[in-house]
Structures are given as structure tokens and as C-alpha cells.
Image (cartoon, rainbow, N blue to C red):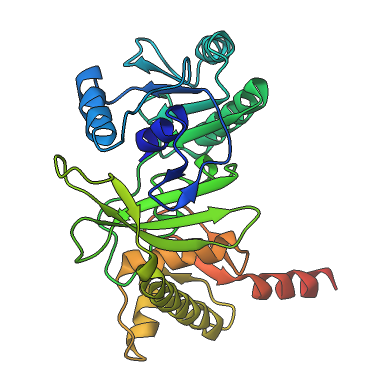
Length: 303
């Protein structure tokens, strides 16, 4: 998808996915660490083959493929990136992928990921443009848990600084379709679906499914309902901190069965909104308590 959008910009296409208008011109520098040149070429050919007389605008798209010694944690690498963007007058930088391009950083360490996020934020300011980071989600999202930023692999520090988050996942039971979740600091979250054409079919690679909005709303409603049930279970604990399993057991007693991973995702989301507070380290021993209960206790101690 990142490569497809870069080509839409570089070829000055009017729309992406036959639905979303291109708002302006830009020069894109695409840094690929995982995919070799041959695979990129195959994907580019697959995308361009259905466009009538596709032609890249001069200097609109350039690649750095499998750079050696590249590490976003290194000041030398960041200086090199800034210079490369200036040299190619790139105002959109694509980093594919975050983890592969930061080999010295622990992908699960909050301090490392916060440092990376800060470095990339400064890079974005230096190039006076946009930095698009491609990253992985966690595997095996449980049934009934809607796609959300809680599914991004690693601690929240790696994505909390982002202005926009766009997430893609295979639509359950619907081969050839992607669920798209968009979250932004400026707008409410959105959900929709894209159809993906198999290679060699001669159809646009991604197309917006306008008829899927009702399905997306249903999924969001289901997820919101489950999250409210999780919050109600924590509230019912009357100020007692609960583990993920405690919440699962409390819900099961009401005839509501959610997988531990699903409950964990909802608790993570509730902690981001400040409705619950996490206690202890990650894992089975981690507990969650109602934020208002903690505030009340603090006031009583102060009194």
C-alpha cells in the first residue's frame, strides 16, 4: 500500500483506489530494508500495468534499497537521511520498515522506541515534509477484537507521536479484501474496506468499497460494546486492581466470553484514554485499576 501510494503521487494520478483525490505534488524518497530490488520491481510492475501510459514525473520517486549499516538510532544515519532528502528535494520520506531500519533498538523497549520516535519527529521537521513509517502489527488478533492502534507491535511510544495512523488487516472471512482503520490527532477514527486485485488480473490494485461502510460501522459498534463491558467489569471491582484474567472471569460470570488477548487490547485502549491505570510490569501479573478510584484515594490521603 505504501508503494502504491508513492506511485500515485509520482505518476500524478488524480485518485488512489479510484476514490481518494491526490491533493498535490511531492517528491518521494522510499527507503526499503526488507524487500530486495527485484521484489520491489515486481510490485511496481503489478501496480503500473493497469494504468494507461504511466509515467513518473522527473525526480518524483527514488529508492534506497537494503542500505548497509543503516540504523535510525544512529546520528550518522539520520544526518545521511537529511542530506539525501535535501539532495533529492524529497518532501515525503517512506521508511520500510521501522523495526528493520533500527536494528540496534529493542522493539519492545519503551525507552528505545520513544528515542526513535523523537529522532524521526526531528527528521520530519528538518525536511519540512512528511515521514511515513511502515510497521508491523501483532499476529493472531483474536476473534471479536476490532482492529485498532492497540494491535501495533511493541510499546505505544513508537506510534504515540504519529499525526496519523493507517492500519491494514485481512478482512475476516473475505479473501481479497482489506479492512482499513484510520486514527488521527485531528479527526475521529474511520473504518472502511478495500478490494485487492490478484496479480495479473488487469485491475486496479486497490479499490474502495463504498458498500462496506455499514459493515465497518457494525464492527466498530461491536468493539465499542465489548470495551464498555470491560470498563464496567473494572468499575465493579470497587477500586481493586484486576489482571486480564480477572476481567475475563468477571465477564464470563455474566455470560460474556472474550479471549484474554481481546480483553488485554481493550484495557490497553482504556489506559490510553485515561479511564483505567496500569499497575506493574507487562504480562500476566500486570493489573488495571479504575482511574477515578486512584484519584479518590489520593484525595483521601491528602485530606
